Length: 345
Ligand code: NAD
Ligand code: ZN
Image (cartoon, rainbow, N blue to C red; front, side, top):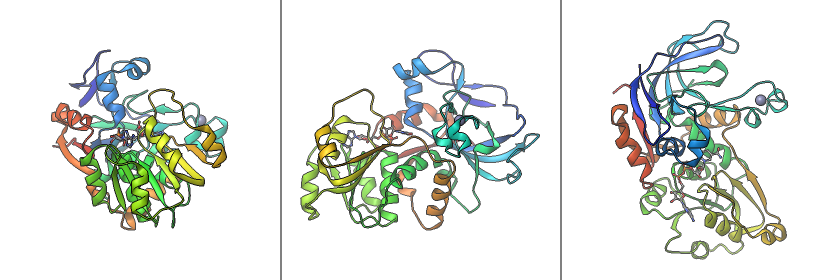
């Protein structure tokens, strides 16, 4: 089968023929239909310091995908509700099932998490194998492009639903694909003002299509300008940090109301200083978010879509997997929404 492989410990990815993965006990073989490109995949292609430290080659990359079940392995613990032909997405965090958090049902907190397309062969391929317990079956109709991005959609939903949003003023820093989806969710579930910031006019224009209250270019206006325009006097109730940028978190801390809650998904590249005196005296809560809750976030995602959440503006470009370099270059531009690769075209 064709697969996009990190063959050597150097920048680049290679589209090569590799053996089809074998389906073991408790596993499911999936024919990949569509995949999404994540920032992680860009790090793997450019082979930055994180990738050099983390990866073992050769590795089939990719973790955002949807596909069709073609085979169910023997001894299907938990696979009884999966059928050949089902449209499925995959939870890319494979957990141990044995640590204290796993045993208590807090699988998103497993210390032994293995990442699809990072620590084991991934989904940028014609076929992928996953444990049955990591397979999410779509029981209601869903566009395969959207099904392909359930992983980052789950990051957005996990973050956005970390704190109650109904009637709240919400600040989202970073209008990358995940910030955009979080903005759509916050608007859909009944936040009062949803303000999203970025430096990219193209990304802010996508946010406008999602019905946010205000898409603010922080290269041109401080957040306080936006608050004044909306008649906000006390600060944001909830902050969703989706950029990993130090200035964004500092701006957020400075514009939260007393008792405000921050959910932080953005991954900073290195340590940086923040105003802890304000965190203390304003009694802010800051919660780190990693991955998706298994499988409460997945349930939330399916129901949000069923109840009319429209993510279609978030997907801006589609490529055949054969044109992967162009697809990756487009994703790396930082000016688009989500990029989809089609594995059937
Ligand atoms: P992305 O890099 O595409 O988007 C980040 C956006 O932040 C960019 O559009 C950038 O222009 C913007 N930005 C930069 N500085 C800013 C500032 N000062 N104010 C406002 N916006 C600013 O990333 P993404 O794929 O949407 O992911 C969002 C973040 O979440 C990234 O940091 C990523 O590493 C992280 N992430 C975390 C997890 C997790 O499990 N915690 C999972 C996936 C991604
Ligand atoms: Zn575990």
